[in-house]
Length: 507
Image 1 (cartoon, one colour):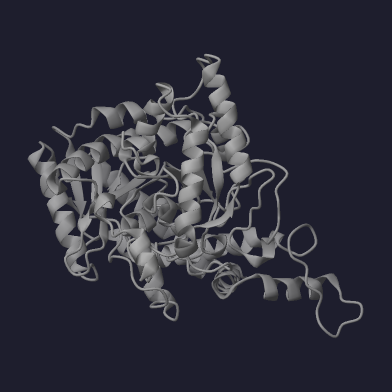
Image 2: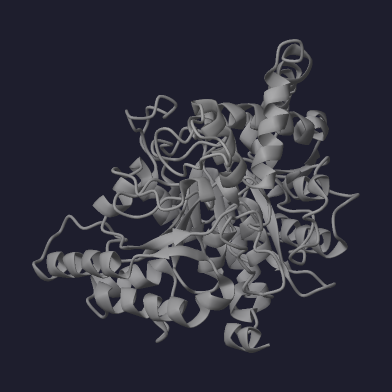
């Protein structure tokens, strides 16, 4: 294991803890020191809970010293959590002013499972407001910066979670993925991100954006680390009515096996070509060639309904968002703003003033769009039609998986763009998720892992792997095998090639 604890993988740290070569307190303190040194430049954290993380670490160390044999393999390894998850005793803002200062009285199931497994929670990571965005520029608390280039975006909406991993501020993080918000940030920061099968990880305590699309998952630096984290947070939860009544799939075993010999891999015809940066496509083609060289059978697969996925998604998501965000009414919790010049304002006037002050432009845009799509006279023409397209996309996935074991595509059509470049062009921003959205509409699992650096700008690119619903272990077997081959071809992990963050900070 590297002598710099912040650079080690979660699996390496877990081994060191188990052998008592390091303590959890030592490890958490190293991460807190790293956060203090670099997060002023990256701005990946919205809240750091140093006291709570160290207390949790001391508890794990005491249990290990007492010979507790029930400790989880990741016990003592610190983690960061996207600020869309309810955390008891710790602020949960969803990147919005309307929830500024709100401290939940309970934990989300994912958070409760992390605590039960003994993972110290370092803090909450920055995000686009209510997970609406592809760049983490729509946070009410300021943008997060990409550790590869501080002038560029780290992806979104979970750019904070991907950035803390890429900046070595945490070995593990939790993100959420509604249309690509784990996978797209992973692609542009050179990290690994996984969206599990819908219902495979509990959504209880996750502040909902679009309830039929949202899914929590791991953000890590290696495929094995993602598998280990998935094993902690996955499995049935009776508190979530959409939770699959089954244990977490055997993802760790699959990641350790890492074999693609005889596997059928489908390259999605519709997710490539025009609109995809040349360097992104080149690295993708090289990764596919490695799979073929390792004994996988590679074929092209057509999923024609994917061409309509973006349009369908941006009717379904705003419709569900407009309903979910109705709870922020200034009456129950969060911000309350009184309208100016009104002596005895009505509840409606207070609600209007609060939402005007508390919601950002992107949230307002999507609420308006969703309310319109659900309104009388337009429901069937817009929302109803979008749901029909969603069914066609699911049918395309089913037909494709009859022919192949997994599907692959580039994760994002471009590398990280510069901060501010797309803020005035929402459609261009939305197109960043064109390759990731189909998986959310169909509920199938997806993984992004680094595929190399683009020739044009030397920035990370990602390859996406998709598997049938409830077959998440296929992602980890293929991902781990491909990761091993790619690292061998590069000579060292991709993140080891990133510029020195201190130098970027100084620049």
